[in-house]
Length: 199
Image 1 (cartoon, rainbow, N blue to C red):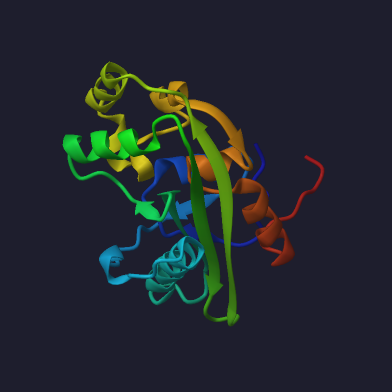
Image 2 (image 1 turned 120 degrees about the horizontal axis):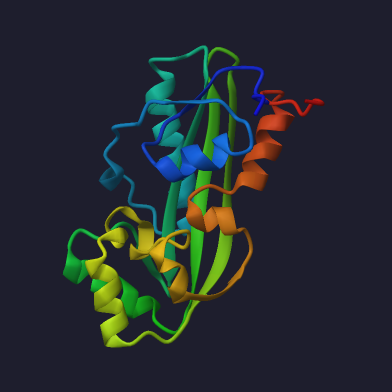
C-alpha cells in the first residue's frame, strides 16, 4: 500500500494496536513511546483526563523531535464514576471485569497532534458506549487467565479474545481498540499531514 502521509509522523505510544490501526490505512508511523508518569494526572473528568495525558505524551516526545508531527493517545474505561486503567494483577482484572459485567460503560480515547516548530497543536477526545453481556464467574476467571487483560484499559480487548464479552457498542469501534481512526484521520487531513490521492 502506498503511504498517504506527506510528512513524518511519530507515535508517542508503545501500543501495537494503535500502530496497526494507522498502518492499515497507509499511514507510515515511527514509534517513540513516551515515558511520562501517568500517575501525575489526577483529573476526574474522563475527557479532560485522556486529553491531558495524550497532550503530555505528545509533548514529551516533541521536545526531542520539534520538527516532527507527534501523535499522543490515551484510553480509559469509565463505569459509573470510576476511571479504570490497566489492571495490575489478576485480582485487579477480575474486579474490573466484575464491575463491567452486564452493564454499559464508556471508553474514552484522547489524542493530541503536536508540531513544535510549526506551533501547531490539536487535542480531542472520543467516547464509545460499550455494553457487556452477563458473564459467569467462570467466564471472568477463564478470560483473566488468558493473560490478555493485563495491558488493556478496563482489562479487556474488544479486538481479541475479549470480543465475546461485548454484546453491543454505540460509537467508534476503533476507539475501543485504542484510537478513533476516523477522527484522527480527519485531524491529520485538516493539518495537511496526509493526502488521499489516486494510487
